Length: 102
Image (cartoon, rainbow, N blue to C red):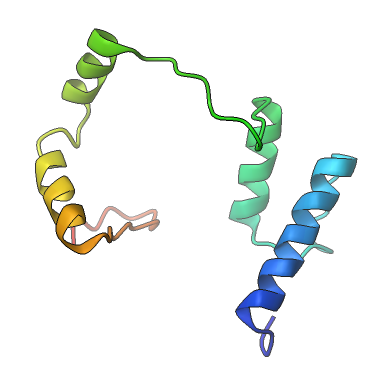
């Protein structure tokens, strides 16, 4: 992967995804993708997610409000929204170790 530009890398990933969608086969060893990406593609396929369609709406009105208020991040959501409104950026940690907000 070293030495290839972002566009070249994006083309490789797009080709790997197209191959996966057309064949249903995924050989991570021969594809230029990370395991976490391959896992996401597999989970999405198993869940019958259509990458070209909007996801179904499963929570409406009161159900959505209840879900949001019960979520562990509900207390900090106003801070996150305010930060995003000001910066248009969010920092997200994908670490398996909980490090808190940064």
